[in-house]
Image (cartoon, rainbow, N blue to C red):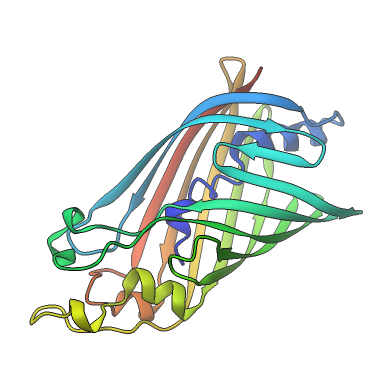
Length: 253
């Protein structure tokens, strides 16, 4: 569900770092390691009424080691690797929520906060295919919810250009969905009925493009999201689909 908010930088798949690593593997070399720096920006088309888009700029400082990867606010640590299967612990911000100033539809409502998620992810690589599954929970207790996602990506390479189509499905429990899309009894008005949101299955499809640039790695990605009726039926929303995009550049020191 709420992937476009945070993880559309997940969203960045840990971005250019992994694009560089993928190209190195395909060329028979070792993935680059060390500290890196860069910049990124993500734009999400919101489905809240009167809230057109969310723009998130990020200065990117990171590190990639044998097991630890840090890319801006995204952290991954490999717990286990057996053949083509790896298991990692993950931390990721959830760029979500709203306050009254974001749209008239939120007038009189309590602020819904962004948060920090943590959990475990499993990845399986089969030649150019990448299968990933992960479950993350709200570590700060804002929504007290959790989200699970499964995705399939396929890597294509044209010279130095890496192209990766990807499709995915996510499941968000009722606590998570209700926190960001529900309307509490004390927030209800004549034009905003109380609403208790249920769990949601959401779908996404997108493509990312990576290419060496100025001695580093540039990455552009676009995703389309289809939201469950539990979200689109909320009195806070006025659509059931949305787009997210990101652009980043990073370079190892």
